[in-house]
Each structure stands twice: as structure tokens, then as C-alpha cells.
Image (tube, rainbow, N blue to C red):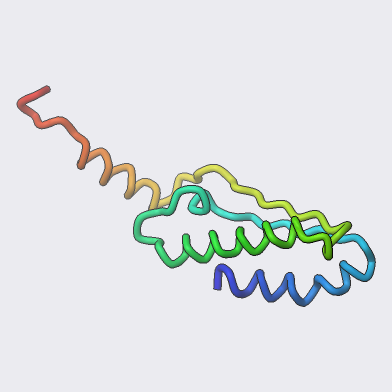
Length: 99
């Protein structure tokens, strides 16, 4: 879903943008494009696939006049992120006898 739906939407609107010689494609991605998130392997892979597809669209001369942008927002404090912080803190904590 993370890759297929946006890709289909772009493919359905591309012909009209090409005909006009103008268009804008904006993808709000995830930091998982740069660094996969543990436990979200399929989602991260799909996001990378979509980014690759958009990179091709942005470089192809057939799509002249169409600007493609990808936004990678920073981290948001979510339950998942708090979980990861807790797990990492516990995993990397110094043994009590070393404190």
C-alpha cells in the first residue's frame, strides 16, 4: 500500500501533466527511506521502492516541466519511537557494578 497506491495515482495523472507541460508531484516520505526502522521491514522497503520510482520520474526527459519533490520530515515523538528509545537505553545501559 505504501508504494502501490501513490505509484498508481502518479501514473494516472502523469499523462495530463505531460500534455500540459507542467505538473507537481510531492511525496511525503519517511526517515525509513534513509535508515530502515526495525520491525517495519516491509514498509521501509516499499518506501524505498517509491523513492526510486520518483527519482526516475524526476530524471526522465519525457516528464519535462514536471517537478518532483520528496520531503523527509524529522522524527515525531510517538509510542513506537518511545519504545525504541527505551529498548536501546536498556540494551546499552552500563551494568550497575560499573556505575
